[in-house]
Structure formats: C-alpha cells, structure tokens
Image 1 (cartoon, rainbow, N blue to C red):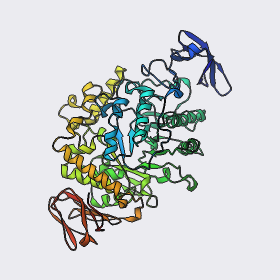
Image 2: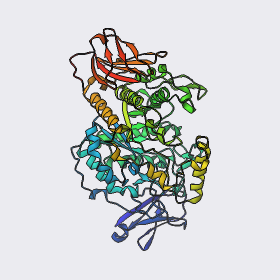
Image 3: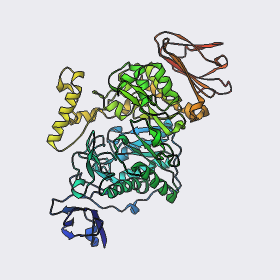
Image 4: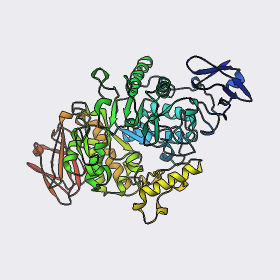
Length: 582
C-alpha cells in the first residue's frame, strides 16, 4: 500500500482518482488529507477532486507527462542509477546560461547533454538552466511554471533531466537551475483551489504575490523550501538561481530567503555536498549575500545588473529606460570595482536614491554579464549585442567581462556572436491569454516597427524556431573569430591568478572620459581599452615593462610610459615579464 497526501485546509471533501478508482481521503488537524492506495492504483496516473471539482493535478506532482491540465504521474527517484557518487562541484568560475528549448534543434535535455563536451572544452564551470518546471504548452521561457516539482515533459521529463545532470557531473560541469518563487503562471495554475498559496496583500508585475507571511503561509513556505531541496537532493542539482527576489514579499521575522538558505546548508551537511544559491534582484541590496551571522540572508551570490547596463550604455549609446542612468566611462569604471554603480546615489531613471554600498564584500558574491535572457529577450526584436555593435566593440565587452573581478556569465551562443535572436515566445492553449499577450507586445513595441503586425508574435511557431541556435555557423567567417577571442579570454582567466582574485581592493581602474580610454589593473595584469574611433596613447604605471598577453588588434604598441592602442581595441598585458602570453 502507498499513501497519497495533499494540503487543502479549506476543503470539505477530497478524493483522489487513480486508475479507474476513486479513494476518499481523510483530513488531519493541519489541513493535510491522506489515504492509502493499493499497489496497482499507486502506480497509476492520479488527480485530486476538491469538493467535487474536476480532476486537478497534484500541487507537488513529480511528473506531468501530458502537460499542466492532465493527471499527475508518480515516480520513484530511487530507480535512477547515478554515476556521480564522488562528485562535488567546483567554485563558481564561468557560468553558461542555457534555454533547453532553443539551445539545440531538438530542444531536449538529452540533446543538451550532447553539447556538454563543447562547454567543458570552452572552459565553462557551471551550466545554468533557465526554468524547467512544468509550464503550459510545449515551449516557452519557463517563467510561467505552475507545476514546480515536475521537469517539463517536452524537454524529456524527470529522467531526461537526471541524465543531463549526471553527464554534466561525469565531465566536470556543475549545474545551476533557475527557479521561480515570486509568482505562478497564469494558465494551468490550480494551487489556489487547494489553499491560500497566493495573496492580494501584495502585487507583483505578474499578479498576486506568493503568500509567505499571511495566514497559513507556513505551509506555502514549506511548499517552496521542499521544492528547492527536492531539486538539490533528488536531481543532484548543484545550485539554484532564484528569479526576481525583489518580487518576493515577506514581513516575517525570518525572511523566506534566509530560511531557504539555512535549510540548504542543513541538506549540504547531511549529503556532504556543496550547494550554491544565487539570486536576481534589482534592489542593489547586499543583504542577500551578507552572512546570516552579520544580519544577512546568507545566499552565495547575486546577479549585478549595473555591470551589464554600464557596458551596454557605453557601447550602444542607448539612453531609454534604465539606460538613462548609464553611458559614461566613469560609471563603467565604478562597475568594474564596485558591485553596484548605484549604491545609495541618485538615479535619474528611478528619480530617487537607490541601493547601498557593497564594496566590502568579495567580488565572487556577484555574477555579471554583458548579455542574458532578460537583456536580450525583453528587447523588441530579441537583439543580441552582435546586432547592436561592431565586432571590435564585442571584443571589448568580452574582455571587460572576463577580466573583471566578478563571476562572469555567458548567454548561450554569445561566445560565437550567434545570429539567432532570443525572442519572447509561448505556447499557451488558452486563446484569450494568447490574444492578450500578443496585443500587449504590440502595444509595448509598436514604435519599433512600421506596422504592429511586424511585432514578433509570441505564439507563432516561427518566433520560437527563429530563437534556436544555429550551431553550424560557429566555425564560419566572423563567428569563428569571436569564438576564438572568447576561448582565449576564458583560458587566460582560468590560468592567470590575478583574474580569479575576488578582492575588490586589488582592482584599480583609471579612465579618460573625454579621450575615451580606460585601464583596469588586477595585480600584475592590466586591461587597456580604447573606446574611441582614433588611436589613443594610454598612460599607465609600469607599462614600460609590460608584455602583451592578448589583443583584439595586433597593432598595439607598448612604449616606455604609455601604450599606443588602435581605435576600438582592447589588450591584456602583464607587468610581470615572466608570464607567458596565450
């Protein structure tokens, strides 16, 4: 006999349908309903009926083989044979963000696994998967998940994800999974029919917030913490990236994020495996990564968007939206040796002071990028940086990323300047929702196109197909050049101890905003950047004895007191002549 349990504190009756049978469930004092099933029923697909409702999937469904509107299927995690008994992940080195559906033509976990040697040989340490929890339809970004315990059926389901993680570990790659604990998707979300998972006391950009501090919130918190522990324990995931934690509202004495971090540390001690928790936040608040004994939440790292915005503003000249706060080399210089550009200073975009200082924290608690799914996919045309700037400028951006003191993140295909856009796409079954999303995108981006009909339709199959990487272009002219540049930069970062030093006080940045040059010194390694269209004489202490390690333009000339840097070029030099070039 096997048990089925579900939390439904307000229900009068609860039944579970399994196979061709219905079983009446009994409630305890905490709102949990349970019953025993015979062996045949226990192995069958199942669904719950709340007060005579239509069959509903299990809120903790481990598998939705036919999608979010179908019954749940039980799985036995013990049946999978892992080969990673001796595995323990490396420190965060270089993260590679991947969307399973567009990373390969097949768009599955198994197809992704076939590309892992490529990532290892590139020098990646961690594969970061965009959300894979079950969401409506066959393809989408994954941020509208509704069955948080079930790996997406179209990607390959539970065993497909396990095979991918197991193979990552066999070749030395850690795996970080993007999880969404700030909202639920609008379609196929039945949690509110079971209990008060959502609250209207707070609002997020996606609707009502998750109930983390109201009545019955203890079970909602348990639901999310258990979900996080499941990914780490049952799927051997090495870490979680927590989406948009600024939209997690919790006034409890112990914040949900602090509780989650504490429980992950307990699991780590029990399993003797190291886990990492990273978070996305737009608040510029280091409390997320300050240790709990110092009053913080104790997460391991945080995304720092200011780094991206500072580079993007300098290279593209864009000033709309939050880019109004960026665009000068002084801001870029600050971004290279401070986690936040806005650390209590006035933001023109927000029209208020924003953030607080974090200069006393190590740089490896902050993840930075020049491109990611949001910064590319939330643009009208899904433009990558290659669509906006020259190849020479791309090389400057890559060098700044790989030579920075922070943890670099690469967005899939960035390393070869992939031509595929990354558009917003969905595959909802609700026609009214599809029409509303389409109309919303047309209104938001109409000014970018001659006709609203030219705005990419999120529901159109071609929008999804156009976003898939074209792997055959990687070795073609132009793309191979960028790929070689990334490969050399990654190799330099991994072999040069100056570039892996997380001490921010060991990073020194100088610049000339008028003449558009910038230098960044990290120990005995120095980055020389010329953003201008003219050759620039860049002065730097110790340059007289410098040795060239890597350059985007071989015409650079190092003299007695300065370096002559060609237009729109970047070079990495060593002030220690014993260090060999790449």
